[in-house]
Amino acid sequence: MGNILRACFKGEEDHGGDHYPYYRPTSRPHYQPQHCGDDQPAAASWPRPHQQALGPHGVAEATAGVAALAQDLLNFESTSMVPEGLGQNVTSSKKAQVKWYRNILEVYKNTRPPPKTPAEAAQLVATALSRIQRVDLEGVLAFYNLPIPSLPAASASSGHHPSSLPEGIQSVLNTLPVNNMCIGDGDGFTAYVDTTDPRESANVPLEVHEMVIARTQARTDRDYKTADALLRSLDKSGYKIITISGEEILTRKYRIRMRGIDAPELEMPYGEESKNALVKLIGGRSVTIYVYDQDQFGRYVGDIYCDNVFIQEKMLKSGHVWHFKNYDQRPEFAKWEREARAAHRGLWASDSPEKPWDWRRKQRRAGHDAIQVY
Image (cartoon, rainbow, N blue to C red):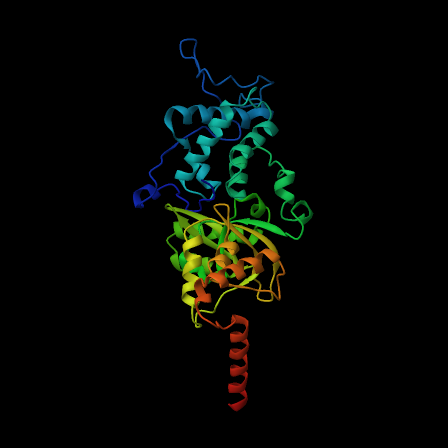
């Protein structure tokens, strides 16, 4: 599962590497397929490469990469080993590379007729590895001297054409599981999106890719001071490397403000209870965010869904938040708040709970007065 950044270069197996061996193919891009005699037919599912005029190395110049890919997949099917040298073109671990070749093999077997041109082979690889980091995909293609296909129109444009989404929605975020520690209160949290998501991959700045590669090399060189500095630089750029199931994933960080509701601040009565209610709803789970706007603090304001449950509705009906009427006039929000009030749920168990916007206004005034006195 894509976007693994923990590189494992030659020699790392002796120092806690992934222990996924390489096999050594011949030099590239001119690859000489191994001859199979009549008594040693190639695997039934693998046709011989398309015959064309041969170049000086005995392989058709136009299809050298296609033949090399076919031979590597044939070898992977029997040995589960990926070609040596691939690790010099990509940033991800051997474990990740094994998964890539498994995916490519599956797509290759289901493709009829098999790819015969570099463009066809490149498209097959791009399809099989659609979820991996763009820089790694380009590395695999370069390894076989294959062209880099254009991003599919839908993926390339999805982040730039809000008109294709329901009215008012600017973008859609599909997050990784939300860490409980990233939930600040009952209406806000920080979320991370895998940069292999088609909506993200085309927008990752080149300098971010370069920092990731430089960090990988620094760790390989055991220069952990530089690696840590690059990690901090990534964080300042709005990106973060997260480890999930032992694999490092490059993610983009988003600060989220839930649209149409306002929760008690943590210092207020019922502030902790409101936060804990949100933790129970989304903590440790992936969420989908329909983004409508950004506020003055740079937070993405949107509607939150988790397991097809509308989170604002749950928070309002249980009495854990207020309807933020000044910024959202949806009648169903007012209705859900009235129901919670009538049932004395959550913060409505109090006769006159303080509005969070009033509390914040008092805090600002108190701070201003303190400055004036000083």
